[in-house]
View (cartoon, rainbow over the protein chains, first blue to last red):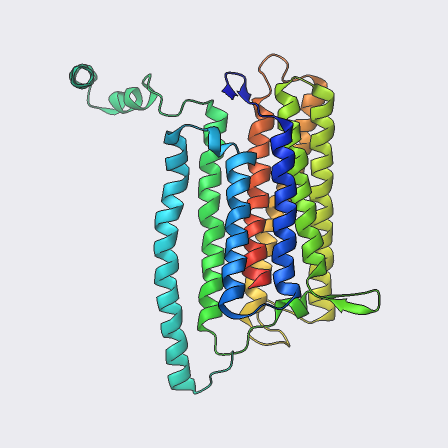
Length: 109
Length: 230
């Protein structure tokens, strides 16, 4: 489908993804509207977020039809380095919070 | 494979190992990415932009995890009073739908570009830009409401943790700047499409512009989930 002319795909596919993005956005909004709390809320938010992001990158940005060389160069560095960064900053943030509670003695939100 | 390796080494030995050699190495006839220069460069720009936005979002996560003050409840902060009741996050939801719609029209524009339908391509790109401008307008409204009515500042706010303001203005401000730049980018390319500027070199530029626009939508997906819904 990725011809020499460039990325050409049936309009129907775009419309399908478009509708799905609408539905998923509505779902994430409803998570807030119906005030889901705790782990259920986090899982649902992250699930809808990942599905939406995946569809935008795969179909709208045509990543699904690109060569593996490009796919790996674009997706691996963020996945590896950002996972590491998030992990480090969660630990760091928790530690900061703990020391604040210890030394300033308040544990609000 | 090994044959190639030997010939590459032999070739490398023939190139002088000084500054002229550095230039030769970089400009040698090698290609990794089987695509046009413009498209590859847009992807690398987006890769670097991914790290910028990720740094903002991780920074936001860090201050939110570490603060001992209560974090303002976003569905209340961003509620609008409509039809006699407070509807949580409704403005943000509408902004999300507008941006998704603009991504859809952009995808169609790329499609019509490759079909060499100049008029439809340009119109769809201008519609996309119009949705983008609407998004920025609603964001300006949101900022005004927060700053003037609710007294949110980058250093303090009446609802709780002061880090809320700095994260909010930094993240949504940087995203809004991207949308604004995208609106300008789209308008410029759309006008050139309309004038027939790309008739000879082809319409890949529409796909490249589209990559940028979809990326802006992609970033919003993460901001919406992590900042507004969390």
